[in-house]
Image (cartoon, rainbow over all chains, first blue to last red; front, side):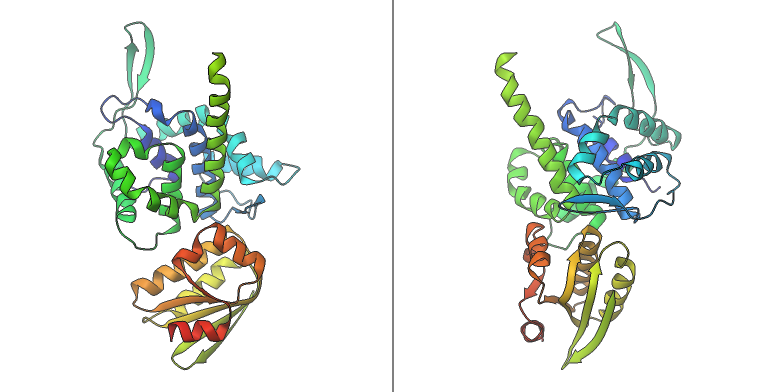
Length: 216
Length: 110
């Protein structure tokens, strides 16, 4: 089954055993999810970008309601903004994207929905994987690019940049493995302007956190 | 975008002219990939390309990938300063051979 990039990214952000979102994927996970939507629109030929701006090239709907909503939102913007602006703006809607994507992955039989209680009190919904096959396939694709020197497909380069932005590689790899492939992760990710803009946006969040942390 | 083909010895040369972006990427990609078939050596002469967007860069990436997997070669020649800057920011200069002139590119992969 073919999954869209936002669907793949959300699967990678889930803790396989508990079906909960990895806490370490937040807050940059919101930007990564927004980036995944933009990446899929870019590969569908609906938007294009350069270091200074991101623009709509084709308003024809893709047939994916989530992507098409974002496409319409960008098309309706009076001013032409850069990728970072859109990553930050769309990142604010990440909760609703996640909800939509979880429902889709359940409908496709990739995840199952479980209602439970967190700390015996708080209602909590979890999404454990049904077989985990889809996530294993995505990871295998990513590692095939990282652990060899082949030139990546644009789709894989974009996905690797999304994982970098969401901080997922420190969950996938042991520290010594991460040290070994960090340069390759950066090389592949930086091929794509969207990935570089996502990193800039994420760096700013952490700079803000560092600035205000002593006051808390 | 106009693409003019020629040959220099055993090397094919595709001279691109105009903007390489979403509007022109599909046709440029089809052309470059067709020229690379059978493990050919191809130089994309960028002298008259004044703009490359993200979609345009993906075309160059796919061409380089195709060349490598088919046992051919792919190089860029003569990118203008703004295009060269985009290639450097994205690290394409580490993956692709980029030469200052068409002759240098032909000599480089010939």
